[in-house]
Image (cartoon, rainbow, N blue to C red):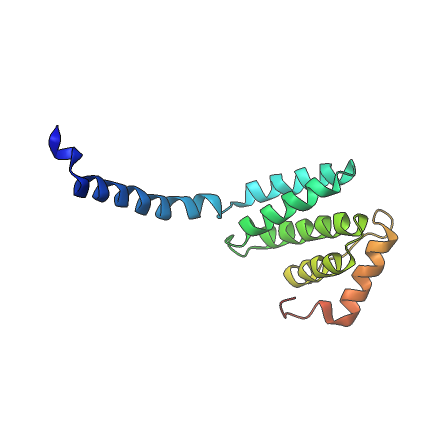
Length: 143
């Protein structure tokens, strides 16, 4: 009983616990699979649809951080581009022009084949998209 009360043993056990947290938490907290990214995009679409732009921006930024470690596949890149377009939509609605431009640039960077349907997309977003695409937004340089 007294051997576990030794300060050195408690320190050793604490260090093992902390090391375990550093090995397990980053992959669980930061890493994200494609299904969870797609769920996040669906949640963002719902938030944008009901004009809850502040929450949409917060969720989009969290999802963006999690998507960084996803393998680059066509499906994950399309989902990331959708996420950026939704974030751009919320930023335009909140009056953050610079943030919206940056998000649109990231969307075009991630998915150069991105197209917006002018019949279902806000004219302001379409105009921003065309400006980004026209200014080399489809170039493969990071925004």
